[in-house]
Amino acid sequence: MLTDPRPILLANARLIDPSRDFDGIGDVLIADGVIRDARRGIGAAGVPEGTDIVNCAGMVVAPGLVDMRAFVGEPGASHRETFASASQAAAAGGITTIVCQPNTSPVIDNSATVDFVMRRARDTAIVNIQPMAAITKGLGGAEMTEIGLLKAAGAVAFSDGDLSITNAQVMRRALTYARDFDALIVHHTEDPDLVGEGVMNEGEFATRLGLAGIPNAAETVMLERDIRLVMLTGGRYHAASLTCIESLEIMRRARDLGLPVSASVSINHVALNENDIGPYRTFLKLAPPLRTEDDRKALIAALASGLIDVVMSDHNPQDVEVKRLPFAEAAAGAIGLETMLPAGLRLVHAGELDLLTLIRAMSTRPAELLGLPGGTLRAGSPADLIVIDPEVPWLVDPDELKSKCKNTPFDEARFSGRVTRTIVGGRTVYEHV
Image (cartoon, rainbow, N blue to C red; front, side):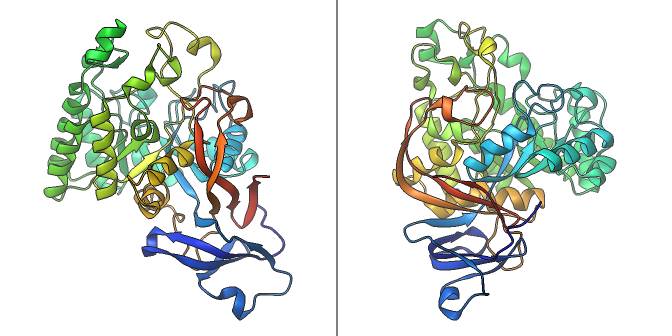
C-alpha cells in the first residue's frame, strides 16, 4: 500500500494507547508508513521539513480498530459485500484491519483460497484484510483442515464461522493440533439442536410476539463443553460471541483455572437488547439472538473488568430479499463496520465504559490475540490509526453507509462521536468532511 509522500504530525490530540495504558495529551509523528513517535511535545521540538501538520485539538487519536469477526462476500457472494466495499465501510468506521470469516464459497479451508483472499484484498481493499481459515473441511464439522499449512499460508486463526462443531472428538483434535502450532481456535457457541426453530431470545417477550425462542442453554452447553476440552488439551480457545450472564460465569471459572481462553462480544449485544426488536424488526434478528437488559448490562461489566476481551462488529450483510420477510423467515445478521465505534461511544458517554477500555477491546486486545502488529501507538509500529471527534452528533442514514447491504440495526439512530480520519500504513484512506 502506498504511503503519503509527506510525514504527518497529528498535534495536540488526546492520545489513547491501551498498549501503554496511556490516556493523555500529545502528538503523533508518522513517516514512511510507521509511527515515529507518540508523546507530548513532538511539534514543539521540531518536525521534518514538509510535514503535514494536523491540529487535532479536541480530538482523540487512537490505534486503528481490529474487527475480529466480519463476513465479506468474496469469494462467492460479492452481491452481499466485496473486499472493496467492506474496506470502504471499515475505513469510515475507523477499522484498519478486518478479520474475514471462512464461510465463503468456496470455503477458506485450503492454502490456495487463503492465498486468493490475501491477494484479492491487497489489490482491491484500502484497509488490511486478514483471513480466518475453517476448522473443518467445507465447514462440515467432521474432517479437520490442515491447520499447520493454513497458518503458514497466512490464516490468523481458525473458525467455522457461524456454525458450531457439535462433534466433541473433532473439537478435541482441533484444539490439540492448534496447540502444537500455537494457533487460536475461535468457536461459535450455539448448539444447533437446542436452537431448533428458535428465532429470538427465549422468554416472555418472545411468547408475547408469538415467536419460537432460543434458550441461553444453547450457548452455555456448548461453551461448557469447549472449556472442558481446553482443560483436556491445553489449546488456545476464543469464544466468538457471548451473550448471557451464565456464559460469563463459565468464562470466569475458566480464567480462575488459568486456562488459555478469551472471548468476544458483538457491539449489538452491548448496545441493544431483545426489546429493541419491537414490532418484528428483522434488522435486529441476529445469531446468537439479542438477550435481556440484565444480560446486556452484565456483558458491559465483563468488558470493563477484562473478563470479555474483544468487541467485534459481527458484520453480516444481508440483502433486501432475505431481510424484508416475516421475522421467523428472515435471515439473521446485521451490518456493523461503520457503526461499531459510534455504538461503543454510547457506552462511554453513558459512563458505562471508559474510552481506554473500549479501544483496548476494539483494537489492542484483538491484535494481541491474533498476533497482528497493530493495536498500538508505540514508535516503530505500523501507522494504522484513527482520529475521532468524540462529541459530534450525527444520524445514521442507511443510504449513506458504504456497505453494499443496508441491514443496520441502528437505522436512524442518533450517535455522538465518529471517525474523522483513518490512516492505514501511513496513508490517509478516509477523511470525513
